[in-house]
Image (cartoon, rainbow, N blue to C red; front, side, top):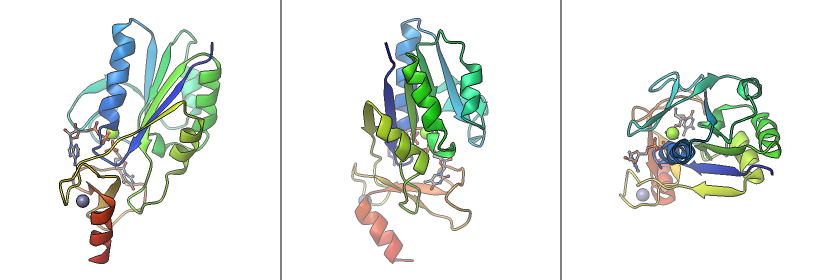
Amino acid sequence: KTGKLVVIVGPMYSGKTSELIQFVEIYSLGKKKFKAFKPVIDDRYDDTHIVSHTNTKVKAFPITNPEEIKNKISGDESAVFIDEIQFFSENLAEVIQELIFNGIDVYCSGLDLTYKNNPFKTTSLIMSYADEVIKKKAVCHECGEYAGTISYKIVENGGEIDVGGFDKYIAVCRNCYVKLKGGN
Ligand code: ADP
Ligand code: TMP
Ligand code: MG
Ligand code: ZN
């Protein structure tokens, strides 16, 4: 039997990592084998754990290249979990395809859009292969509505790849995004 692919997307602070960790718990409680991965570049809270903004965490292998996932897999895993997929090369999509065709369930999460409102290519690609896409929302930092779909950068430096948290980004709804942009 082939595995399934579940992708969790949305802006920053929308609960992507928390939801990923909840899926980990389901496999963990079921005594199923699994492995978790995260990009080395994401060193915000911890190198060797996937950590949410509310400090829930799961042990994970920090990797640079998607191919490293294949090397770490022994074949008896029921599931593989990957956070911050937007930071990986597009080749991650092929590696994930290989896993699901080999009967392993894959759960991954990441940003769908950069703070410039451009799609993250790797996330878009993986969403096309997904059995289920879970789109999360954040509370808009400006108007307080539960409609935040875009991350907005409050400091002007760095490019579209720039690791950070509350020091650099807020989540906003589309209307507030337009207002903030206009005010620049
Ligand atoms: P993500 O991985 O999408 O950035 P996390 O799962 O790490 O999200 O964190 C989600 C948590 O962040 C929420 O449960 C909430 O406690 C907190 N949080 C902080 N700011 C916001 C916001 N603007 N909207 C929603 N949750 C927020
Ligand atoms: P989060 O979705 O778990 O909050 O983490 C998103 C990470 O991505 C965080 O380190 C900031 C980074 N990031 C970028 O590199 N570019 C962007 O355009 C945005 C919005 C976030
Ligand atoms: Mg996260
Ligand atoms: Zn708003």
